[in-house]
Length: 284
Length: 311
Image 1: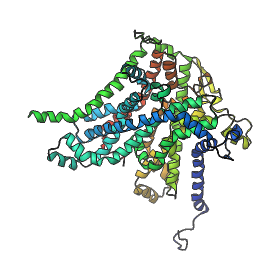
Image 2: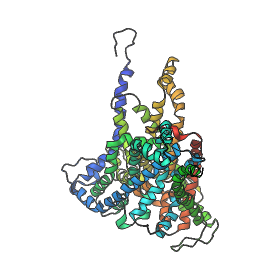
Image 3: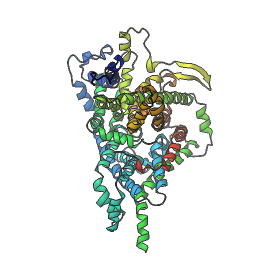
Image 4: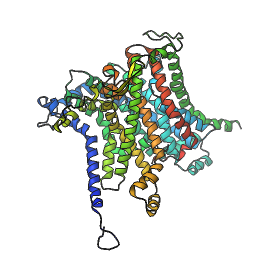
C-alpha cells in the first residue's frame, strides 16, 4: 500500500478501519461458537464445591479430574460398544459404496442413472418411517439389541451416501485408464481390483471419515434398537443427562468424552471432513 | 457368444445386492409402515387388521400432534432462515482474504462434527433460566431475563383446532442450539459458491462502476441461488426429522411447546406401544420430507452428477 504516488488516493478512515472491524466481528462470532466448549471444559474441571449455578462462567480456581474419572467409569462399556459398532460399520459401508460407485460411474449399464436415483432416495427418508418394520425385522432375524444388528442397519442405510461419494470420486478417474484395462481383457471386477481400488485411497478417507462421524453421533437407531448393556455412547450420554442424581460436572465431562473422537477427527482431518460434507450436498 | 452376453450383466449383478437391500429396507419398509398406519395395531400385540384412515383422523384431531405440526412449522422456517442469513454473512466474512480467515472458518464449522445429543446436553445448561446466558444478561442489567425453553408463551396464540397457533417462545431455545450446530454447513456451502465465482465477474462489475453493495446484491447474490436451494433442502430435511436435539435438550416441554413429530413418534410407538399412531406420524413426516426432497433428487438425476468435484 503505497501512499507516495499521487495516483493512489489516500485511504479513507473507513477503509483503514475495515480490517480491524472485520477481525472484531470474526472474533465475536467465534466466541459464540466456542462458548459451549468453554462451559463443558470449565465445568468438568471444577471440584464439587465450585459447581454452583452462579459460577457457571468462571474458570476453575483449582482443577479436579474427579468428574472425568466418574464419567469414564460410567461410559466405558458404552464406549466399547460404540467402537465395536463404528469400526466394522465404517469399513463395510465404505467398501460397499466403493463397489457401487465404481460400477455406476465406470460401467454404466442401461438404467444405471435410474438405479442411482433409486438408491439415493434412501438418503432423504426420515428414518422414523422405516423404524417400526426395521425393529420387527431385526427381532425376527435375532439381531435386535445387538451391535451386529446396528452394524447391519448402518451399512444398509449408508448405501446411498457412500455410493454417491464414490460415484463422484470415480467419475474423476479418466476413462482411458479403464479402457486400457478393458483392452488387456480385464472384466469389471479385474479393472476394479487392478485399476480403481489402488487409486481409491482419497475416496476411502473422505467416505470413511464421514461414516465414522455420522455413525458415532447417531442416536435414533441406537436408542430404538439397543437396550441397557448394548447401548452406544450417545444413548448413555442422554440417559446420564436425563437423570437427576448425576452431578453437573460429570455430565459435562461425559459430553466431552462422547464428543472427543469426532472432534479430534475434525481437528486433525478437517479438510477431508469438509469434502465429505460438501459431497453430500453441493451442486443443487 | 454366450459368455459375452453374461459379461454384460456382471456390472448390474455387482450393484444388485445394494438394490435389493434398499428395495427391502427403504421402499418395502415404507410400504409396511404405511400399512401399519392403516391398521389397528395400537397395543403391544400386533394387530394388523385394516382400520382405514381411523388413525389419521384421530391423530389430526390430537392436541399433541397439532402442537407438533405448529412447532415444526415455526422451527423449520426460523431455523432454516437463520442458518441461511448467518451462513451467508459468515461466508462473506471469511471470504475477505484476511489472514487467519481459514482458522475462523474452521471454528464456525466445528459444531457440525458434534452429535445433536452433545449439543442438546450443553445448550440445556447454557439456556437454563437460572444460570448460563441469563447470568450474563443479569450482569448487563436485565431485570426480567428470558425463560428460554421453560416458557409456555405462544405468540399470538390464535385458537386453531384444539391448539393455540403462534410461535411457541420455548422453541427459540432449540432453534439457537440448532443454528449453532448447523449454520457452519450453510457457511461452507456458500463459501464454495463464492470461491467458484471467477474474479473476472467481480472485476467486470467494478469496471462498470458498481459499488461493493451493488456488486454483492446484483452480481454475487444471484449466482449463489443454487447454494441457497441446496442448503434449504438439506436443512429442511434435518428440521423435519428432528429428534435427538429436542429429546436431549428439552423433551416435549410443558403443554408440548417444544415437542416435534420425531419425539412423539418415538414415544408413542416404543414407550406407549401405539404403533399405528406412530406409523401415522412417520408417514406424515415422510410425505413432508418427500415434498421437499423428491423434486431436488429428480432434478439432480437429470443433470449428470458425475461432474461433482469432491476434491
